[in-house]
Length: 171
Image (cartoon, rainbow, N blue to C red):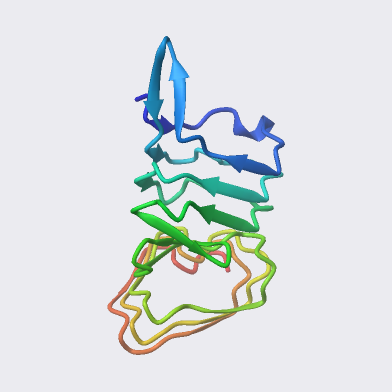
């Protein structure tokens, strides 16, 4: 599928900043890049800042596994599906927090009131965030949401109806 960013030998990518292209040229054709697939940036150990263009309409939950240096994700204001706020990746309407960068550097974070869902793997591998304040609007914590992180305090209301498998594994 020429419309996706696929996994490769990303452990050999040493770029600190990656700009996902809006299109690629291959075999004489130009294709719009619309998806970032599973493990697309896995083990990009030096990746600190990722820039997502307006063309991306799908980002797999585990696209950023082991990106331990990632501190910021920026999304084009023209993107209809995603946005970023202070370097954190959200769905466009901010009802879902998709990825809190593993090396954001904060010790505490208050999730915005607009958030209903913490996506699968959203805080996974975070090594600085110790405390999270969840809003009353939060209903769902996705699978492996905080897995392998150092989070020790999560303050949540009684409104949460779903906590996914392995959400707090290895914390």
